[in-house]
Image (cartoon, rainbow, N blue to C red):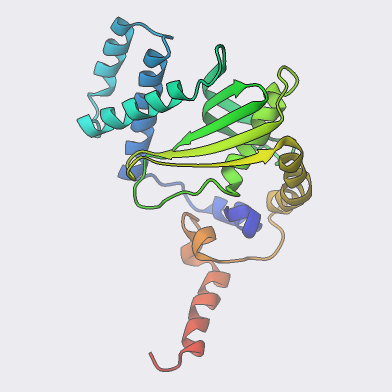
Length: 237
């Protein structure tokens, strides 16, 4: 979201240290518990292995029964998405989309290939911000990464991208794009913007969405100017 809208921010924020938070650490644990539970539901590991690994994860201060319930709902969702007799299910895979974005990659929580559809599923454990699947740049980049890896092996015509947010009343939001449209977006929109971003070039474009998680926002002149301009528009506060 950020560097597609505000290309210089990608390099600008590198001078500021990365930080973490309790929410991020909780989310990391939730992903581990969900992956483990899903592997158990899919039959990839037996009950002994599941209980042993779960016992280790449950030592974290962030672990609780609610997390386990949400992990189980995610696992059931994945199992129910197996719409054909023998789909290919891939958990926690590295998705390389460097064809479109220099050094670009991410981790796909779950891919399900059931020709001619490729499902890209992302677990969001946060509950403070609802994430939409429609025109979601992260999901579309993951879709391009998955196509780069598996398109030569399977007949994929449609990429279906799903955001699963169990803590928001089990919100599940999906969007579909044809392979042709997704690649066109990658080539015409992403590639030129990513080229600017990788060089730290282009125009700053502060916005609520772009600045939300930007490490440089507190010292960004463009954002300061935009915020101060609000007082000019409303001289009587």
